[in-house]
Amino acid sequence: MEWQSVIGLEVHVQLATVSKLFSGAATKFGSEPNTQACIIDAGLPGVLPVLNEKAVHLAIKFGLSIGAKIAKVTIFDRKNYFYPDLPKGYQISQHTHPIVTQGALTILLEDGEEKRIAISRAHLEEDAGKSIHTELHATSGIDLNRAGTPLLEIVSEPDIRSAQEASAYLKTLHRLVRYLGISEANMQEGSFRCDVNISLRPKGQETLGTRAEIKNVNSFRFVERAIEYEIKRQQAILESGGTVVQETRQYDADKDITRSMRLKEEAHDYRYFPDPDLLPLEISDSLITKIKNSLPELPQQKRERFKSEYGLSDYDARILTDDIHVAHYFEKTVVAAHATPAKTVANWIAGDLSAFLNKSELPILKSPVTPDALGALLNRISDNTISNNIAKQIFKAMWEGEGSADAVIEKRGLKQITDSSLIEKIIDEVMANYPQQLEQYRNGKEKLFGFFIGQVMKETKGKANPQQVNDLLKEKL
Picture 1 (tube, helix red, strand yellow):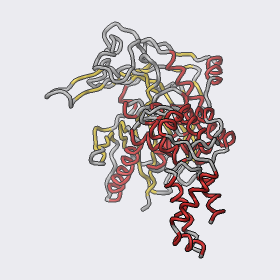
Picture 2 (picture 1 turned 135 degrees about the vertical axis):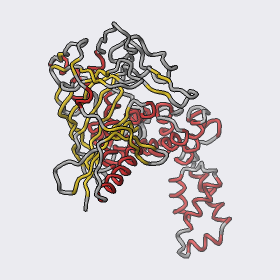
Picture 3 (picture 1 turned 180 degrees about the horizontal axis):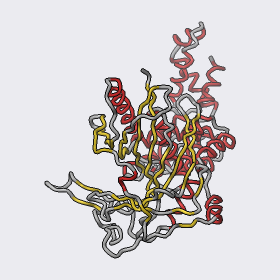
């Protein structure tokens, strides 16, 4: 039997606020345990929540970017369950009246086709704390630093059909929230994490199968691998005549398997009811209009502009706009490299700069070579001060802290030789030194042209203008 996978994703995005959703405690990552939890986060008797206005604005901003409906009235509910790291015994969330509904995200598939993934809702909620089991001896600890951190939970419809589509959706969503500036979306820090709901059904059948939920997957690669494993697991159960159990599972990256955690709770298990300490929130048309007018250029818009304004190919535009910080770096470099074509700038960023960043495991924001510095280097290629090959040596020196392009050129004596008479003299010497190869070339062995080019560049230590060498050598030969 052919099976169809039906996948929906719930993505938890930590919003970029300096304080928590209902308290003034800080949200900075990496602090000592329990140093960023106040009495509200700890759920002590008599405390009352106060809603973070910025978190509301960021949620609206996201909703508008995906063409969703923004609720005129939204309500906060208590979601009741027991975890050791949930100090109040409930989580403040939005169940019946979420702030964002009925949006969509368009993703690009591997074959170049686009697919629309519906987003049913996005709602605000506070995060729980964290249980620590590995760092303490024979006991567990509770860190409440994350308790109360503002999250936007983005819930897709079950429109996704493969691990690859799920990864494409997550990457598109990740890119969008970073462009909007509503989250750092750092997966290693837990500010962008995903729950995967997956079921199988016979191909052609409309009725959904029993789903399993895989909790808290925090990398694009792990999401793909978890889904691929889960599809095989459920398929094996169904084809052997068994029944898939509705449950919550976790992905074990070391063993590349999913493992059962608990039976999946239904909504009624959480005993939702409106939080009596928080009034219904009314959202005005004027606020929605104000936030809509503040929306930045979104990824697709930037991609199209890069193609029209800079004459880039679709491929180059996609590479440069995949990360908003790379897009900003590119545009700053184009301004600095005023004498250099934008395509050349794109090639250097996607090539040499990217290679050095990857090798050093650095984000582009921490590049030792700034856009202005790279632009100055590229201008020296454009004005024939140096060759492209020499520029690569200079870039390495700049990366290692030797100074600006001009300083490295001066210090190492790398200025390009453009004196035609001097280049002709060196060509004459090379031809005289290799009479056998010269005769073979003139007898039709044209591949030796590259040999002569190499010898001239060797004699000039790579400093001769390559185009001049090419033209003069052809004439001489």
